[in-house]
Length: 148
Ligand SMILES: [Cu+2]
Image (cartoon, rainbow, N blue to C red; front, side, top):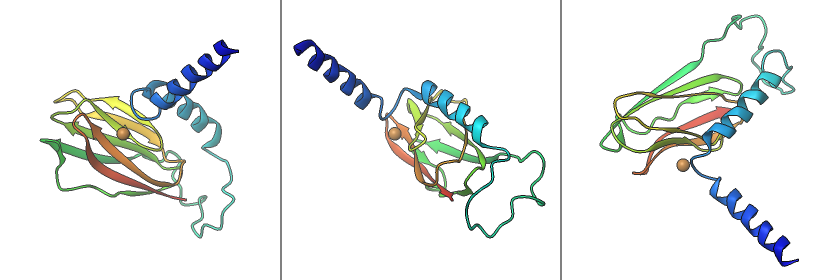
């Protein structure tokens, strides 16, 4: 029985460690798969006043949000972009320092290479407010609001 308890403890701590940070790859894969399954023609069972049919172009362009970080701070202050649920979004972060950018909630992390913009493409299918952070050093870069 002791072995079983130990195993559980190991699994539990692994889950905790995965909560914030560096496991971007597996999360991204899952998100991409789910996107393909749910996105294009699924009817939206809401009371949203905007029709999603006639005015939608065939290939929606992604919403690009650009952030420049100098000396650990987002230039122009913390951005608070708002997008509609289902929008394809690309975060483009140009940072002169730091190890990782991390989009909370969607839990997407990407390593930072100074001088090279980091791209985080994702589909905004989770409504709420989500912090985009720089890690090591830590700084809040933006808060992305996804409206249902
Ligand atoms: Cu974080």
